[in-house]
Amino acid sequence: MATNNFLISVGDFMNIHKATAGKYIWQVLQTIARYLSDHIHFPQNQNELSSIKKDFYQLASMPNVVGALDCTHIKIESPGNFFRNNIFVYIRMYIV
Amino acid sequence: MLVGGAEAETFRNRKGFFSLNVQAICNANLQFMDIVARWPGSAHDSRIFANSRIKEKFENGVFGNSVLLADSGYPNKKYCLTPLTNPVQQREILYNEAQIRTRNTIERAFGVLKRRFPVLSLGIRLALEKVQCIVIVASILHNIAVSVNEIEPPPLPDNIEQAILDTENLPEEPFNNIGNVPLTVIPYLNHFNNL
Picture (cartoon, chains in turn brown, red):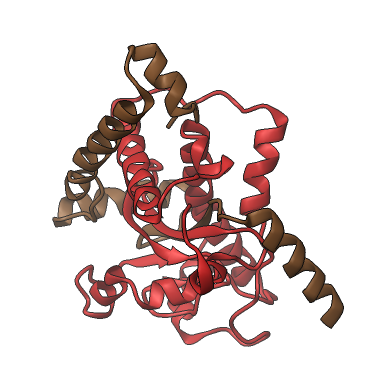
């Protein structure tokens, strides 16, 4: 995940086939993901809440802030991406 | 990412490439406190928030008078403050500056997350459920790394930096009306009166 390596090279490093590597990596990911609520959670008591507010206040004296909210796009690939990309851009340009 | 047929196009975002739109809320230490990784790239940021569980909690007053800071893509609510579109008075300018500087934490959190796990910015070629799993796991590991004071990853080579910028710098569509100050912001403006 950190290196964006291919399974075949990961498998080669561990002396296992890439199918085996893929299977176990998937299992490890699922296991870690199960602990989501332990690591990613909102403050559960007043003390935590006020310490977060204090941290935020120290940044730029903005009171009462408990979190900063935003969205980000995680890039993914779609099959036939290249073909569709071209078609899509073409059609869009036509309309414009 | 293996979405085919009619479904695939819903994942195309307004920038033109396929993506998953991930919403996150972080604290001042760049640790994530909430993450939603289920919406396709075509979903607007405000739509994700409107449907999220954390919004319900804020609506029901679970966190008292606490607020979230968001960019202008979100609606202004009493628990969700956005920057003013047209600051005139001194206190409005100060509010905007403080809002932006505090909100900057989430941008930095995403930046650090994507530097730690470049797979998130280079493009994932797996089934959708695995992509979601990877996003969640990356943010969990990121939180752990921050809590044990792991050093921040070094800056990336230019081409990868550019890939991240491409996914980050999407044009903002101003959501709220221009000119008048929303009622929800006024108590906070009074705070900046005294500074």
